[in-house]
Image 1 (tube, helix red, strand yellow):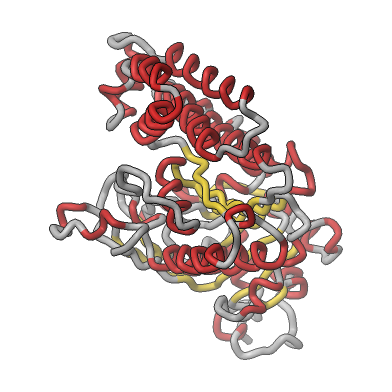
Image 2 (cartoon, helix red, strand yellow):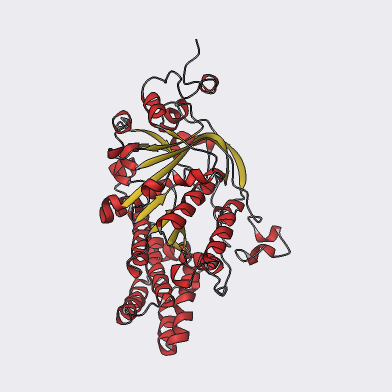
Length: 453
C-alpha cells in the first residue's frame, strides 16, 4: 500500500481523503488551498493580515517566479483594499528611487539602476509586471494617495553619496561642498566598497567613520528643522546619508567575521522602514525580502546560535501584532541563481526537499498550493504540531546543490518564525529581462530599465 504522503497518492485523493500521519496531516487539515495566482481570489485570502501596519512577504530564493507573482498579487490586494501605501524592497535606496519614479510618473533620476549583480533579482518579467500594474494604479490617484516604492538595503554606496550631494546642490550649495569633502574619504572606493573595508581594517587606509557620521548627523538635523514640511526629496537625501554611514560600517565589519555585519545590515533595513513609516503617520508598508530577513531570527539558529538579529525580529519587537511575517516555501522545481558571487545567472534544478525538513512535511500534506495560518488565534493545531525545530531551506542568489545540506538549510521553529506559510509544491525560475553582463548586450537597451527596454 503506497504512503498516503507520496506524490502519486496525494494527487489521487480529494479534500475528503485520508490525511497523512504526523505533522503533514495537521498541515493538510489546516491548510487553505490557494487558487491560481492570477485569480483575484488569491489576494483576498490574505485580507486577514490587512489590519497590520507592516506585512512582510518572504521568499525561499531570489529567483523563483511563483514567489514574485504571489507577492505581487498579495500586495495589489493590500494596496487596493487595505490602504497600504509603501512597497519596501530588499534593494538599495538609490536603485529603488528609479522604480519609484517609474510608478509615480516622476522624472527619471540620474544614473543607472540595478546595474550590478544580481540583476535578475529585480530586473525580471515577473517584477516588471507588478511595476506596470502599480504605475497604472497610481496614474488614477493624486500624488498624496499614490503608493511608493523604497529600498531598504545598503550596498549602493556610490549612488547614495551622489544623491546626498545632488540634493544639497539644489538647496544649499555651501553644504554640498562640505558633503563632497567629507565623502572624499570614501570616493576612491565607491565602486569597490569591500576593498575599502579590507584596507581600513588592515590599517593601510584611514577609516571614514567620523566623516560619514558627521554627514548623517547634519542631514538628520536638517530633517528635524524642516519636519513640518512634506519634503520627499529631503527624506530621500537623509536616507541616502544613512545608507552611506551604515555601509561604511558594514564593509569594515565584513572583515571581522561573526554577526556584526549581518546585524548592521538588517538594523539598517529596519531603521529605513521605520523612517518611511514615521514620515507618514497613516502609512502602511508591504515588505518584499528573503525569508532569512523577514522571519523572526529568534526562532532560528541564526538567533539561537549565531547571535544574529533580523528585520522580522526587529519589526515584531517594535510593532508586535501590527507586524505580520509571511514565509514562502517550495519542494522542488527550477531557480534562477549563480554558482558564486558575480557569476553568470543560470537556471538550476532545485533538489527535492530533505526528509527532515519543514518543506518535506509541507510536500507530504498533498496540496499543491496553500496558505497555512500559524497565528495563535487560528487554533488549528499547527503551532503544536510544528513546534519542534526542523530544517528549513534558504536559497539566496547563490545555489550549490552539491553542498545543499550545509549551504542552504538551518534549524527553525516555523510557527514562531512566521505568522503564515505560503506553499508552492513545484516552482519555476524567474525570467530575466536582460543579460547579466552588459557586454553581452551591445545595444545598451537594458540601461533604460525600469523605464523601458
